[in-house]
Length: 236
Image (tube, rainbow, N blue to C red):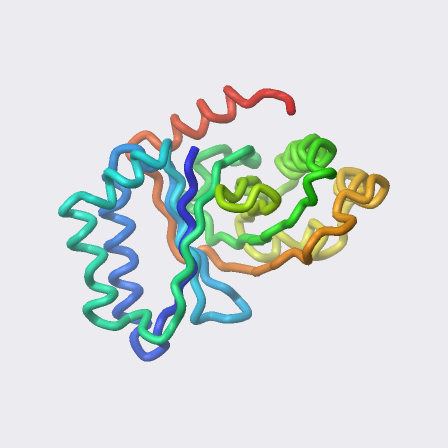
């Protein structure tokens, strides 16, 4: 699956207008064939910074949707009204490697308040053969933790050593059961190989953002696509 990731800002004085625009945008995108899941995250430490995260079946589906009159109409509002004026917009492309869902299953985003650990991780090439089984095991352990909605890992299409890890919880309080709070023994054991095997030796520092889930929608057959993706995953 193809993940289109956009970092952008919102002019504080225009937030209310932008919020209405954003909800409309998601409503339109939810009707686009090939969309799996779209989320907007808001950075807790920099509340004017947002991430638009669009998961598609393929890049071709994304390109086709962006070229439709419906999407053109709804997306032109932002530049016309200067809702992000003065803020940089950063586009990134990823390939989804893994995703697991918590006890609520793939439907969890429909009712959650939502809190996401958004982490850009650099893994040196010589460590990746060990890192991939490690991150897969971590996902399996996290899927059993109370309050987890999803845990996903994606590979940057333009930097083979850069990965995006996102852990999304029902709310911020639920996230404190993991490394950000008091880790239980399962979590401690799952992350131990990172130290034992020096998986991040020589790596650039990770870039972490604590984000609130502003809004989320599934595509027309998004939940089925997610179930099929997980069913097709193979050991690494």
